[in-house]
Length: 595
Image (tube, rainbow, N blue to C red):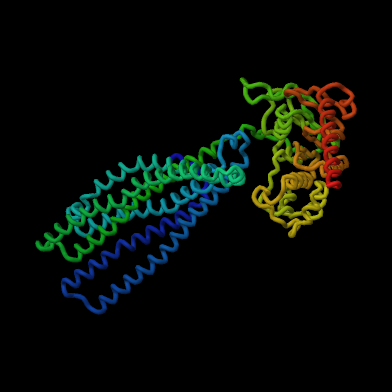
């Protein structure tokens, strides 16, 4: 039960709802326990021949009033207790999502999306049920069991009550024996559900790849295996959980048989009235539910503990990159970036990704980073955005070490276009204005300006719904180039002092790229771009070349072309490729005219 300590703040906030619900539930149960006494009184009067019309009417109205009270009371406690369960689900899911937002890439690299979705759905719902149905059943079963025994003793005495309740010790033993296996199998069931969710999520996300490679049968077989594992674990859990009801019914059935024989004998001897006998039989009927409920609450609690343990693993997770205890909220946001002898590697025994990288990007200037794939270009961006910490050296933004800045202040400085363009399942306008203040709404003029800057305005206006066009999951309705350009527009809309383009023109044709670069040259804010194409970076104020994690060249395009090295070789090779492509294009057009 230690896992439930996480819920203490919620319980404190909702103690009033739980208290009202529990008190109302106890009152309803108390009234329910007096019903057999009314029946007992009626039977005794009938046995003595003392029934009158007024007496019958009084008892009928009494039973009717008790029924109305119990109906209203049940409505109240259901709204309070079950309503608290729904509020708990909201509270947990909201806290879990906020926790997700604080965790960094290290955490997500080790987790599957399906498993995280299972936490936010199945685990949260299970804990919610344990704190609504579980609380109700626990209170109901304990109160009803305790006071049913008291009412039986009051009605027929200790000796007769003990005979009727002779099976209770066996019921307690059965419940205790089943608790351990239920908890163990419940945890295995929750893990199997996570695996199933992960399998579904991955296959749906990759459905186009599956169809393109024609491996539907393979994926169906894989899903069948995971689905079968979940089915088997569910059956194993249910095999134990479902033992409660029949086991308790069977054991309590012995109490009926024993008391029927014993009670008949006592009536024949004249030491027990028919009314008392009927009341005890009714109490035996009533005590079956709380005893079954004790088994149910065990199941609810054990499953809740398993789910809460899984959620607590997330809540206890710490981001590897944490905000400073007393962060600086920089107000200038000029976009001046300094890398001061920065080196980085992923682990002490791993090779260096970056070594002694130093450069300065002044506000309003453009800096381009160029190099082969895998030399550490994007790592520079990751370090600047504090996705990783430098192993050596420091990074300054507007004169402050980024480790001292608040995350909000740091990220307000940048508008980032990542290598992989990710769009949300919203309209194009909402994707472009993703950084808009929700209180102010979308600035439509700024959205169009951003689209024009990214050279995607014509494409959007050609669509039937224009800027209101829904892009689908991950922007599936747009081409790769359109997604990249919408991502550029989104970064531009933010109006940050520094625009970061991480190889963000790779899916754009050369003509569109040229128009975007023209806009970038006229952009009044700072630019930090990464590319493998000289044509993309040649107009930058400063170009640095990265080779094997080190800066090997730096300067303007003219300076680097005039110097032997990687940049000049790459420029000449790409210039030759462009000439060959142009020649092939001209030849194809010529052949087309004479065909």
